[in-house]
Picture 1 (cartoon, rainbow, N blue to C red):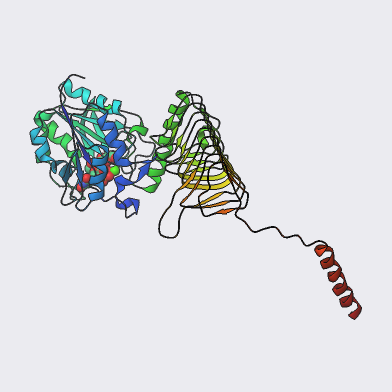
Picture 2 (picture 1 turned 135 degrees about the vertical axis):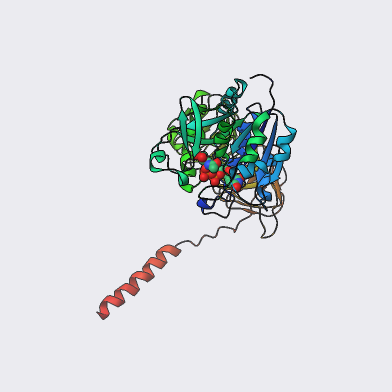
Length: 454
Ligand code: UD1
Ligand code: CA
């Protein structure tokens, strides 16, 4: 693409009533990221020079998400929701300042790819006034239909306004439109609201451009690129497509996914070389897995950094702030949160390690719990290098176990343990010889008496 500038206008002001949710539609997640973040990421990678996001009144959370993903984005508020063309004109001052291409992208089409956006701009360089992204959905219900004459688009008809004949058209509007800068504003300002919904439809730009003898073309793409999300069903369908893409990318990058369809990834999941992921593993946001690590079946990870050659699971839960050093081992039914494990450190069975640091090669025995929460505040536990925590111990934070120290199993540790020492903090064992046989004898006497009374 030559150096023509491009302003992207992302429409996100709709209420999304069909989602039946109190959350704004564009903040719903697909593959661990909001719909809006997906769209802005694609826009950011498509050679766009500036971005405007149109939000609804009071949608500060949508504005915050836009700024988080693309700090340079300008946010405009559409005061009343009067349709997609009306929403575009909320960013009129940005359009006036901008001489190059205009790309209108709907905030509810999260699967759009940067290459598709770039392809849509291409016809503008060839003199077209408008390029419309078209697709043939398996179910066209709800989409605007493209009315064609040869390779030119003559109109887009919204479903509510379409005749039975027009509804039978399979080619639909993907909701993304590129407009040549020099005619864009004049076209947009002529759009009226003479339709069934009394809304200003962006799609009417097509007929207005044609009336001025301008050329409108369609660029056809796969359905998956432009799936619009209006309902929870469509959200789930988009999630499935996003997961297929992420699994495919992970496999292409050399990750071993034993049963790809059972592994759920986030858009930002990062894998090193020779990583193995067993079946039924969920990766929430912000997970990094370094070279040679193995994630065993039924594990759940989020916000975790898994170091080189680490073994996680089966049935492990890594929560945000879990950081596992090279060769560490986190076994079954172990939960780790805000805790750093040094190289070779192990917690192999049934433990909760939170707000802690565990030194290199330390061994956390089965059933160890860091008691990090006192009902109002969180406290830290420090376990030194080569320390050994016996099974079923409670480490009551704040507390520190020195390097090389031993904690006897079943201990409740409430005070710091010096390096290389042994701490035993449990009730003393009591032996009463012959106690059990005396008990049994007593029971049989009681039983015999009961029988003799029958
Ligand atoms: C729109 C298109 C339809 C296309 C479909 C593709 C129009 C008139 N119709 O229909 O041809 O097939 O997308 O998915 O453009 N929005 C605002 N302000 C408004 C209204 C909408 O910002 O006043 C935003 C919404 O947040 C959404 C986008 O514009 O991100 C599209 O609006 P939506 O109501 O979902 O349009 P569709 O009925 O799906
Ligand atoms: Ca839509």
